[in-house]
Image 1 (cartoon, rainbow, N blue to C red):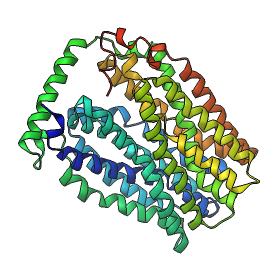
Image 2 (spheres, rainbow, N blue to C red; image 1 turned 120 degrees about the vertical axis):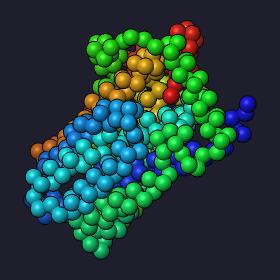
Image 3 (cartoon, rainbow, N blue to C red; image 1 turned 60 degrees about the horizontal axis):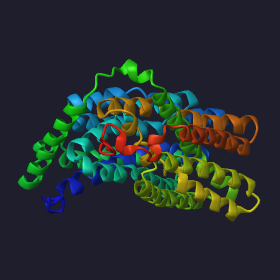
Amino acid sequence: MLVTKVPNGRWIHIIPTTILVYIVAYMDRTNIAFAIAGGMDKDLGMTSTIAGLAAGIFFIGYMVLQVPGGMIAEKGSAKRFIAWSILAWGGLAVISGFVQSPTQLLMIRFLLGVAEGGIWPAILVIISNWFPNEERGRANAFFIMNIAIASIITGPLSGWILTFSNWRMVFIIEGIISLALIVIWLPFIYDKPEDAKWISKEELDYLLRKRREEQEKIKEIQTNTSFIGILKKANTWKLIFIYFFYQTGIYGFSLWLPTIIKELTHTGMGNVGLLSIFPYIGTIVGLYLFAQLSDRSMNRKLYTALPMICFAICLFFSVEFTSHIWISFAFLIGCGVFLQSASSIFWTIPPLLFSPEVAGRTRGLINALGNLGGFLGPYIVGWLTANYSQNIGIYGLICFLIVGFILTMLLPNITSGKSLSTVNGKGLHHHR
């Protein structure tokens, strides 16, 4: 049977809808960067340290539903769980526009993190239910691109709102957009193919057959490794810290980028919004390029490590050339190219080091603890900026990225494509 002859309703209904939902979620997560650059810090009397804390505390809340959200999606309904999450985070995003003090902002940002925390694992459950193993890599790659697309949209939209209103309207308008997602989510998404009203018989039969085949394979290679057993493995902690340091660099850069561009170019927020597009156009290019290089060579370690060190180098030179505005900005675009390039490649590594059953638990643990870097990055830039200078804040991010690079290069040889054929006789068939 040729897979190309199977109807592609899942690609038309599931992928665009999940991308759209996470685009808006990511927008409400990061638009605080434009609110800070647009005067929120002055209106609320926030120091750079508090501003960084407000941006980063989201990720403390984000941890709360990471594992429970995935479990609810697996055992119950991911569709219903995400529908309630949309209403919760959209409402909190709107409320953000009415805060009157840093304390209120910190509370809302924490709760926003809680509301969004279960969406990522729940969407991955939906993708896993709808796309067989040989399609899941592409499906995940398309989904991850939502981050770059969201950043491209958030910059101009937030900058445009600030040209005719204020930072409060950034939260309110973009929160209303979030609430409107519910009318798209409910009719298009179903937890499993057999629940969908729009699916054809041919596509349903194909997906059910593939699911049965995968379940049989999983039974053959299941292990009894416990959660405690996972925690005792050195490779688990290597991956957690690699992801932690990587996320520190990503969010430290992303949430302070509007302020960096504003101080570099001394231009208005409308232009800052437009200029912020270019690093994220680079992100899409980098995601595609490094995924291609990694798939061709099967060297997952190298192409996870390279973007980190290249990201650090571009950050360094963006600071060193601040007296030459457009050279510095060119290096900021370079940062964008490497910003997310390691993401999709990194998530191919756990299945190389752990059996499929254990890899699933490990991915949840890595995502929950590693995303704490999203708290540390904005906070450390804010603290170093307040106590020293913005350049020192950027140097702090560079140090974290270098550590992440070193840890990645210390991963086992199997992650560089060596001896793959000897691992359980399975090679790369475990990739998801």
